Length: 220
Ligand code: DC
Image (cartoon, rainbow, N blue to C red; front, side, top):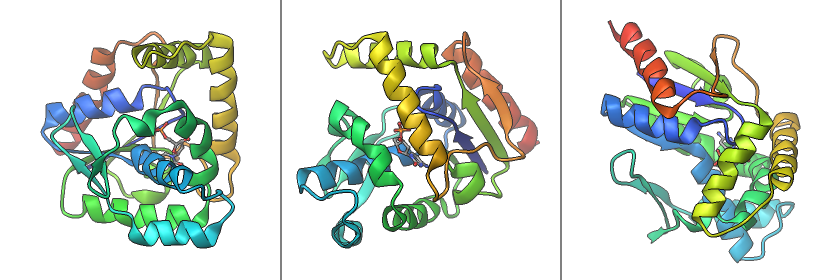
């Protein structure tokens, strides 16, 4: 069974998807982490997002894998644990530009389909129900108000020792939403057959229970 969870930044996808995968005992695939890992590598090598030739080289040589069982899944790039580095402010500010490139998306979508082949997976991202797994048995489109998402991001940043105002975070989130929703290659859109889930005011437990219940219904 494939459970596809899509939605904008900060809508609660990651924590929910991890917990759902842990509860159902199935694989968790964080596709945003893959776009972040490629962005991290490109930034480290000073490769501009417009340099498709160099990005093609990075796509050909980079090995991204996941280690551990959900909810504690580590992101490994070329043998290095980059779980913390891919969440840096710099990567977050640049990832929308790198992930919009065809050369990056084609390669990562292929890797995502391969990673899920023959398994039950909870896969989260922006184009999972529309492009990566259009035949997923369960599709969820998560959203939350911009303010709520900024508050969640502020907490994440505080845990990393970074202080940011709500206004600044709301602007960043709106800018990333705009870029992710208007890019030409597989923009963030809701699949026609996705179930809408507005997580504003919902607890993590509520979100997990909602999806697990739907998954169990489908499997019976
Ligand atoms: O979910 P996240 O914030 O970790 O995602 C990082 C970026 O990657 C986000 O700006 C959009 C992009 N992304 C994407 O384009 N397609 C996906 N399937 C997942 C993420």
